[in-house]
Length: 638
Image (cartoon, rainbow, N blue to C red; front, side):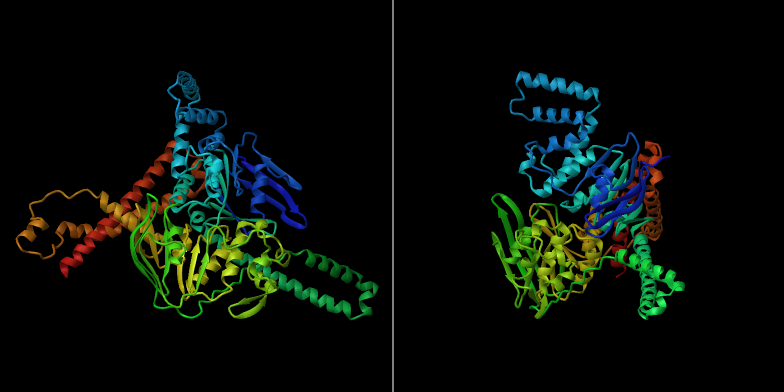
């Protein structure tokens, strides 16, 4: 079966920088390929070549004649008076225009007028003829899952909401090849997990760029690495890619060191004088000249960021004390009666849907807002740094250098350093130092704000979405630094892996102003939520002849109930049953990660998907039952 798309010997350069250098690439139906690479490596440019929005300087791009491609770009769409529903439905061509008009007519205040009713009937008949109602339901579902306001004009939406609108438009178009460039940016965790599930059962081929490592691990059937203009393909999972990539870089470094040693020897030989110019040595001279050309054309691997965090002097033992704190905007209750203490050294993650109040909580703690009820008491000897998600601490009109210092030198944790040398640690080349901040990419702005924050010793770090647009290498370095940080950390993030690797507890916005407090990171909270849901859905036990716990208490006997023989046998069997279910779940995940899985008939795909959901529900119920019986067994034997 031919591939959907193939790139043969494709090259593309902007100025002197080769973004693509004689690359070959192809994608098969049903594949889910993650494209990885450092910020600025050319990943978005490769997407534009695949989508046909950019032409290569050399080489050929071959596509199947009927190939339908949909591309989510990083750029925010321009203003338009069209509503969110109309923009999303436009991804469906003629049917989308009909659905958008039908949605508009049915929501008009004058919908009862005769002309509107007649037009509704015409639209209804045409949509019927195109079998469009199922697709209309898909549009509504995507809008609901991404929490998008269907009837709001796009011009009135924030940049983040506009990105989500374009993601929705891309998803509903149901193309053969889906190109997603950072699809999780500006999504909350609920929307990210929905997107993950949607893409797992998506029938077309998918190529995506993301810094969300959890998404990569759950979705990708192949990793393709773009490094210095070259593409390398790594079938298998993300962990396999990381180990093989490390091996490749080590082999490359050894080969480069061997080449450089030989070049140095030849340079020493040529400098020794007249012998090098003898006729019999002309071949050696030509070989040296070729080595010089090869060395000058070598592209060195981009270095890794090298920043450090200094917590400075210790703060008081209690860093932040929230006492019955409430906050509301008008009639909108954001936080209701929150009481918690954050101790020195705590690393607290803050989780919740977009707009739930996470940034508001940070601003209450920082003193930028006053609570409408209760009190926020800050600890002693605090030195605070704040990384805000809108990068408001950067002046977009000033240059990188001017945002750091008014001179060429900057004081970093008490020591004077040249601005250029310091910013090299954050991967800013010297020629980028005098660029205005408004010309920087999202990842570069993030690194600049981190550079500004880390000049000082701080013992309370408040980070609001620090991971957006950072490449994986920089993310992992930041993770390691925060894990070793001796100060107190408050972190808002939708990056599940980042939360799990950094925080020790979580505050979760659960709706209606309630903020829950949990031990551990995201996965610990998610596991608790699954167990709680399983306990709520567990059917009530049938009445037996044995006296109930309430009846026993009424008789004055408050001794814990021991497990029955049947319950003991059930408890003994549960670990084996759980292991069997987990094995089946792993096998189903492995099968669904194979590109060939989606070439099967639709009923087989649906059956496997339904079985996976059933296994997940059964596992949750088994874990909940095991926990309950174990608890009763310990209490009864105590």
